[in-house]
Image: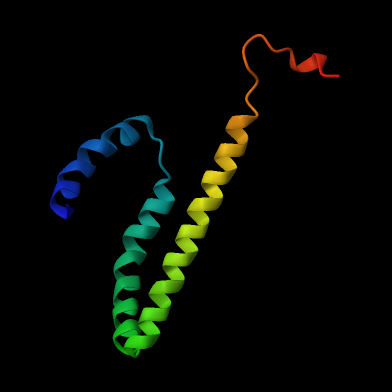
Length: 93
């Protein structure tokens, strides 16, 4: 999967580069700060006991799942408020 993503990403990003639809400042910040953050994370995580790492992984999974569920809920609520064709929103009683 990593190999297919490595071949996919340059092709998929061409449209963003052509349209200038990305933040160059953010991209440069991630490019420069990413390797340093990985080195810091390796140093930090290898020094932690295994039960602590398990709890941290669990917290990240729970946070991510709750964030995704909240996002889906907001999208579902906003899509249910779409006015149907033929309805006149200004004539509500």
